[in-house]
Structure formats: C-alpha cells, structure tokens
Length: 169
Image 1 (spheres, helix red, strand yellow):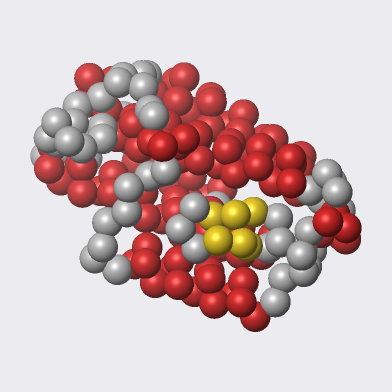
Image 2 (cartoon, rainbow, N blue to C red):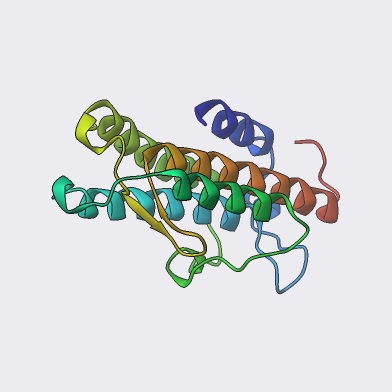
C-alpha cells in the first residue's frame, strides 16, 4: 500500500494545484478531492477500528463469511458499477494543495503504522470493522479492502487525468 501511495503521489506531484483542483465535470471529484477522500477513508477506518477493539472479548470471531464478504467487495470494486462514497468520507474540501494533501495522508499512514506495529495478536481472528456495503471484516480483510480501495481510486485519477488531458506531469 505504501508503494501504491508513493507511486500515485509521484504521478501527480508535477501537476500544479490549479490542475489538481480541476474537475472533469461538475458532478465529479478533482484529483485532490480523491486524495482527500482516500485520506479521510483511511483515517475513519483506523478510528473505527481503534474504538471497536477496546474490548477484544466482545468482538465476534472471523470465519469463512468474512472471506466471502471481502470477495464480494473486491468483485464490486472491479465491476463496472459505481458506488457512492459513504457520507462520512464523501465530504471533501472544494480545493486544496498538493503539499498539504500529501502531509495529511502521510500522518494518517504513520498512525496506521504505529497501530499495526502494536496490534494485539488476540485481534487477529476477530471482526474489527463494519464496511458500509459488505458488513463485518477482520484484520486481513480490512487490509485487502484498503488496498483495493486505493487501487480503485488510482484508476479513477487516471480517468480524471485523461478527461483533463493531463497524462504527464
């Protein structure tokens, strides 16, 4: 995930803020709005997990159903269907700047790194997150979701760049 994030940021780093804030159409997000959504989504996921994992014994165990859920989510992400972002992560700023967006995402990733390094083994096979579309997921499925979510938005940024005719920095 860090490699994908670094690659994405490198691919847009040479674009000016005016381009990064331009929308291909009024109903679509700009590149920086997509980055803001990714940052907000990763932060909200971690916040939810931290809250829910305070009492590990109260969490149900993962099982085959959690794997079916993530398989359905991955299939949905790779399908031609479009899904609206949940309200909590869809509220992105109208505009921004590359430096601030990069820093904000780096801070969220540092929080994730610290959390993962201290992740209690007792939670490895517990449900720790409720995805808004597919329901309860365990730690492995959450990592798959975050990786697939990022990949989906990398493709979206590619479509935005094409629509704006800014294929190269």
